[in-house]
Image (cartoon, rainbow, N blue to C red):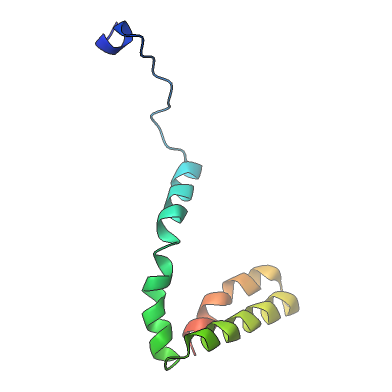
Length: 84
């Protein structure tokens, strides 16, 4: 018996992370930070017209998603926004 069990403490939480836990933690950590890393590239390539670049990227994403396949539209998202 450990000293904590003597006081009525019982271990209830798992001390292991599953792949699902790591993916969720990674998304929670990266999602708020991701726009800051991309903003400079988009600002430079779009000559300061970031909203227009994202709008053109959104239209391209919808066009590819409806014309080819929704998965292709998802993957078309990033290159369209950066190449402007």
